[in-house]
Image 1 (cartoon, one colour):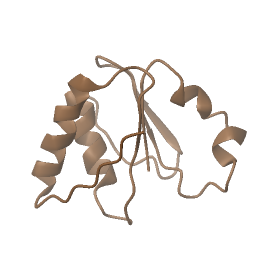
Image 2 (image 1 turned 180 degrees about the horizontal axis):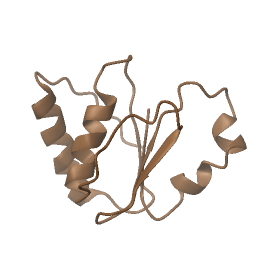
Image 3 (image 1 turned 180 degrees about the vertical axis):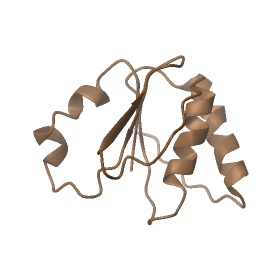
Image 4 (image 1 turned 45 degrees about the vertical axis):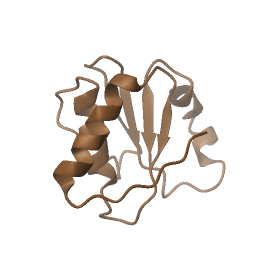
Length: 107
């Protein structure tokens, strides 16, 4: 597992960086995002979606747990797991996303 911590001066810089990762990602890759509410996790995911060639409107999955975006080079699974208790991802069958045909981005 590779860990990276970066600070950005603007939302545009954050999204540009995330978009640059898109071409490098492969099916089954999982990105774990950590940050407080409003830190930019969904902004990062918007940039990542662009880098994967996804043109759908990306919004926070806060109330749905997972949002799927399938119209790009790889599917993108955007997850908000902050409300789940330990083991909750397994209980919901989310491991299928982590080992699936796309990229999982979870915060």
